[in-house]
Each structure stands twice: as C-alpha cells, then as structure tokens.
Length: 121
Image (cartoon, one colour):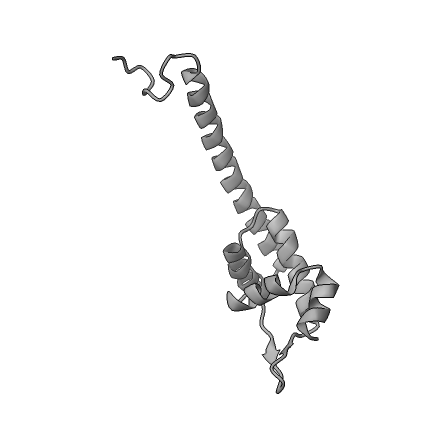
C-alpha cells in the first residue's frame, strides 16, 4: 500500500511515516515510479508503535524491543518482562522526582533558595 493509504488507515501523518522509515522503524519498497509501497502488516506494526509510545516507550526502545519480541519464543512473556522493566524505570524516576521535590520544598522561604541546604553566608 502507498504511504497515503497507510497514513489514512493508521491516523499517522505521511511525514511521521517518512521519519519512521528514515530511522528504520518501518520499511517500504520503492516502486518504479518512486512511490513507497508498504506491506499490509505495517498497519498493525504502526498501531503497536503508537500504543508503546503512549505507554512511555521511546522510539529507540520500540525498535529494539520489536526486534527482540519478533525473535522471542513466547512474545507474551517477553512483553511482560519489558513492561516490568519499564515499571522499574518509572519507579526509580518517581523516587528521584520525589527527592527533588522535597529538596525544593525545603528551600522555599529560606531567603536564598539556590544556596545549598545547610550552607550559610
């Protein structure tokens, strides 16, 4: 299918599809007239990409994990492992943000909030 049809079926712009092709996330064949031709399964792959993005995965993670999942004997188990790892990353980031918030909160009203905690002068 051509890029316009793929864009219509997925709700993704042609520019985004071209970008995904440039970074190797999707591949299309070039027809003799220069048009891109994408396999029908590209529609489902792009839906997967969008869902993964909405779950916080970067395009690099999606590309890497897509390759891993396609080679995995049990894709459901492999996908669950990826989700568990993403949860660990999110939990660590939430802890960092909570510590940052506490530090900022401790500096409110100190006169010079940019001075290190406990520093005088």
